Length: 94
Image 1 (cartoon, rainbow, N blue to C red):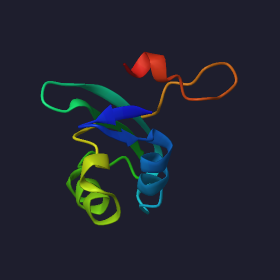
Image 2 (tube, rainbow, N blue to C red):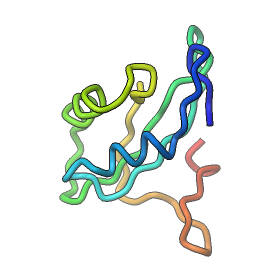
Image 3 (tube, rainbow, N blue to C red):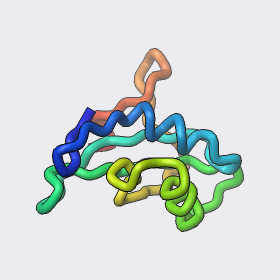
Image 4 (cartoon, helix red, strand yellow):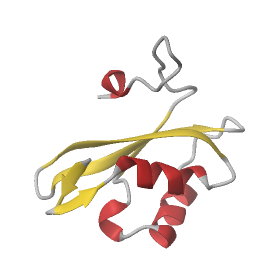
């Protein structure tokens, strides 16, 4: 969990929403420092078709999430870093 503007944001909830987009294969959301809001979301996404444009993903999030939960930053990766057990290694994304 991270706190954005005094509101609790649960990355799992945001990830679940983004994963419903038909073009997303994998996603990981973390909180990153922000001067005004304390922290904001940053989403690391992997597209199914190798795309690199995130504008429609942002629009999708705006439709399905509260404004403070929408990630302010997106980064497209070829694949998310994983540890030996196959879980996403969030520490490598920070």
